[in-house]
Length: 116
Length: 114
Image 1 (cartoon, chains in turn brown, yellow):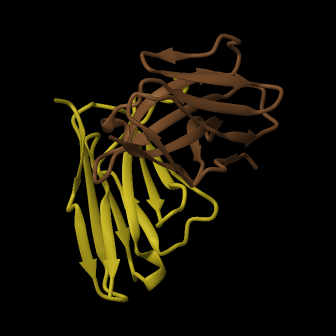
Image 2 (cartoon, each protein chain N blue to C red):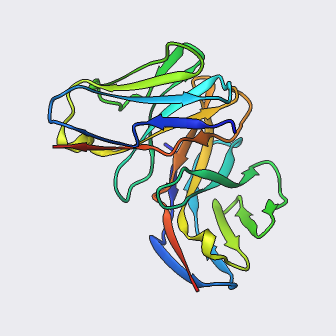
């Protein structure tokens, strides 16, 4: 069974600084996708960034970037120049095909607080 | 804006009293998902529809059922809610299967069981 582990239940960072959220996963699949989702307080979950397992180049979206280490099964998220609006729960997720559709398996999340 | 809408945002029901949560989408996506998210836990997939094709997760209790009368709407029925069913229920959609697309989430319905 695929599992996703986020070892940091809570983190905090000062505004404008950089923070890295950790994620490891376990799978025997060779073809999969990895995602980071953000869930702000009382708002819906939105996609932050995605990474295809077959791509060696790390994905980047503006201030958000990942460090994807396939052999180590590690997928960390770096947020640069943190902003107050980055305060949210962050979920790492692994996508695998199942029953013809793709299934997301989530980690337990990391609660990030950006302090002014 | 195209979106995923969940109603109500907060639902209180009594132990054993059937309850229905609703989800609608304006994205015209073929796949719709229901997740259960308990406090401090990861969202857990209950089931999903690809068009009208229903796919149940192996460990989803029989107490949970779903209906998708058309592309836009999907319902989660809890036949006899127990205290352990109190959770946030998230609806999500994706464009199609085989596309490895992101899933688009609604804001969730927080269910309280008294």
